[in-house]
Length: 595
Image 1 (cartoon, rainbow, N blue to C red):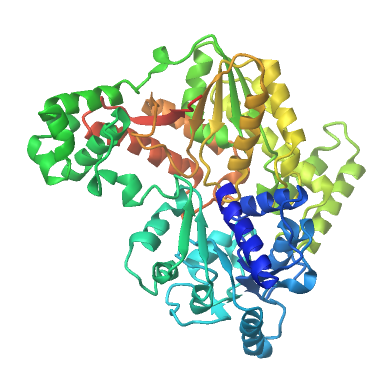
Image 2 (image 1 turned 60 degrees about the vertical axis):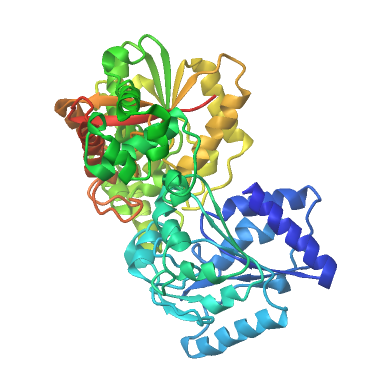
């Protein structure tokens, strides 16, 4: 993010000096927020002046009132414009409230405004899973201009979590066209996370086709793609660099190459022959060792040594587990959690956010109905309980999708998630006393969009670390959650650990809800029996508000979380088996963070 912010700052300084203004094309979504925060920081530090910056946003949902929670105009003011000295008249966002009969006129006027400003100096882009840039969906032509478009099914599924259901996502949007974007003098496309890796690969290395609008960027003379390693993971230069060039054959690179070779050839590692190395461009690796045997044995041993049954896991240590949402612990590490408890470790499970926005209104209403009916039995005031039930019901009737709940309902939904987390812990044999509910402030907006991680968040995490003096810390490394909560929670933990004056604990990163660590990335593989996996699945069932239809399932996987977890854990073990490693029913995978 800092690298891209550097480039934007350079453009602003250069263009304002040369012609008195800089024209930026801006994007929305979760990915650019880090860039905007960095620009705000630099402005507030006196290093960046927005008074002569003119902006044009890529797109807006249609219809969309500018003050709605999902409006991109509102997004831009909340995440950038309100925090810098941009002149409001210099801000341009397509108007989602324009009457339909005036849309063509509005789109033409938007194009004229860009031309009158002298064209866009620097265009910032994200990329959708359909390969769209702006809302130029599959089938968009290279000469398209600003217009009304129909949103692709994939795009609407991606946005479903923001709108609390796919049915609430607008079916249309106003977007700059591909030609409008390509007219920019400089373009930067930014993508983060494993969930973007496949479409990034198509955009960068694939054939230029209208079905993936981002491929048109290959024709631009000054387009740069900014990626984190996860989003770059499917690019040939990252995934299989030995196909393109000479590489440094470190043990890690050798392991990746040999596992890839085994997958391509359909053989177990110890059965790979010299012919296999030659056929799949790995002759340089073979030449270093003279024959396949030493290479095969080295990689087989590295992988086998990653497998740790219960006897080889920590015992009688202090273990601190951070769970971003109230179900990430059992979804991602329900197997190892039980084994660590059986090994007599002292465990604290810290649920970092309330997860309350992920509770359907009907679930909250059902719980309130129970309290109202049971009030007398519980020694409560039946009339007060009934009033609370009716007040909540009225608030649900008035609420549009995405509206913020009343404070009372937000608290009720938090308690629902907390009670489910307790039940899930007990389901894997761990007492409720290990649970800590941090309820970090950054999450307490009542909206999908969250505040940046602040000092108070870091302080809360830091106090728990000081209290527990952990030897081992578990952190969510699954950074593809729909709204970045995992990423933000990890940032708070990283900052707190950096400030911690005690002995630095070992940190294990887990995944599970959206991806699993590949065998070559993992440092620890924890085998699970069929009974252990079943117990893990039953603990996930305790999160009843997330079962059947989770409000924020993420991605395009229609399966429930327990189904995804079961399939991934079984497949991890099956993959190890195909490579010739010891056979297990299922496995969880972990990465040990580097100090």
